[in-house]
Image (cartoon, rainbow, N blue to C red):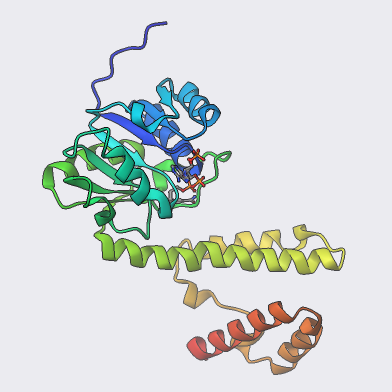
Length: 265
Ligand SMILES: NC(=O)c1ccc[n+]([C@@H]2O[C@H](COP(=O)([O-])OP(=O)(O)OC[C@H]3O[C@@H](n4cnc5c(N)ncnc54)[C@H](OP(=O)(O)O)[C@@H]3O)[C@@H](O)[C@H]2O)c1
């Protein structure tokens, strides 16, 4: 069947990992015009391209020039390298963006005149469809016309579109690492403790969900419970005794207990 003409801005997705895949699918679902997917691995590029009815390549030199927007969804540390390579293929006036929270937009400056950021502030997995309409999409470009283009696209995929400069986005990313990466690591520690004692993770799953649910309408500082905030020293002592056999986790427990006491008592 012949593909219908799409008058939306043309987009090339560079990368087909967690973000490239989920963002590509969302853009396509909301009628946006993803014309090509690039991945170093042909099978990955082809898989995403098939899902979103676009072209694909695993050869950076074959990336389509003259697209309205290039979105880099590659590892933070390789944005610079990929930009340098792509600059040999597409015009320096092309609008390039990345999806990284921590990387300044100026990573593109040595290679491109028009650049920005299209950062969806959420945790993504290639196999789990995100609730896109609620995901904050943090945009940046120093050019008003480019910002307008980015906003027009972001507004199609989410109801929460923000403008954050590089510094603001970097700070939001630090907060996100605490809120998501660190809390998930602590969930993993809890899971491992239960596993070692042959107890099911289901014992604490409702607790984790309730903890997140409670902050829907209030600040986390108001929601703290547990032995540290109550000052139940005997309970803390019992926990530390149990944790003697897990030296690293005991360190985390001590540090967290001190922090909760310091900021709440
Ligand atoms: N995951 C998240 O929760 C999340 C959330 C918000 C923003 N981000 C940001 O989104 C970007 C992508 O993250 P991700 O989680 O999607 O990563 P990912 O799933 O690991 O995918 C990374 C992509 O980078 C490509 N890549 C890696 N090294 C490369 C290189 N040397 N040259 C060209 N391509 C290379 C990989 O290409 P191949 O397919 O060729 O291997 C893959 O498509 C990062 O900037 C990250 O900070 C991630």
